[in-house]
Amino acid sequence: MQSKDGYGKLAQHLEETLKVHLFDQNFAIESIIKTLVQMRLVHSKVRALFTFIGPPNCGKRYLAELLVTADPHIEQLKAFQMDQYNDTFNAEQLSASSIENDVTEFVAKNPNAILLFEDIDKADTQVQLSFQIQRRAVLISRMSSLL
Image (tube, rainbow, N blue to C red; front, side, top):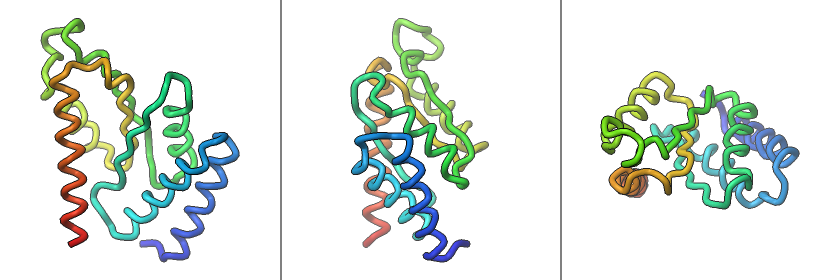
């Protein structure tokens, strides 16, 4: 277990590293680093949940890739191509349970990883609904643990 000083040094290292490579995103970087360090200090099972929204090629994936290389606690990045989970792709993979199974299986094997859901707007509506429900459940869980 790291001390608060150790986490402070890690936060400083991460912030400096990310700001060297990613421009004009200081607020986002600072918010992400603050949340990651706080989740480690309280030993939460869910380290963090972020939603990056923006047009293509604005740095969302790049930020996730930088986090993997800069943070020694994060072991890998797994991208799920959400357009594979739509009604035009394949009837077998259509269900929300398919993506849930894929995610659950990956997280069980790689608990210290970043999950990236690419093009979630292209996923089937059932899959999108499933993610909204999961996000709300995580937020409710976090709030109840603070009470």
